[in-house]
Image (tube, rainbow, N blue to C red):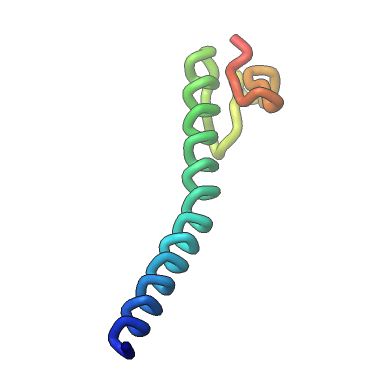
Length: 74
C-alpha cells in the first residue's frame, strides 16, 4: 500500500510541476510571438525596427500596429 501512495504522490508532484512550467512559459512565449509579429509588421510597412520600436528615419512610428486586435494596420 505504501508503494501505491508514493507513486500517487509522485504523479501529483509531476502534474504540479508541469502546470508550473506551463504557467511561466506561456506569457514568455506569447510576448515573444507578439514582438516578432510587431517587428514583421514594422519592416513589412517599410520602416525600421530598433530596440522594440518602429522608426521611419529618426522619428518613431506608432500607427503601424493595432494594439486592440494585435494586427498590422497596413
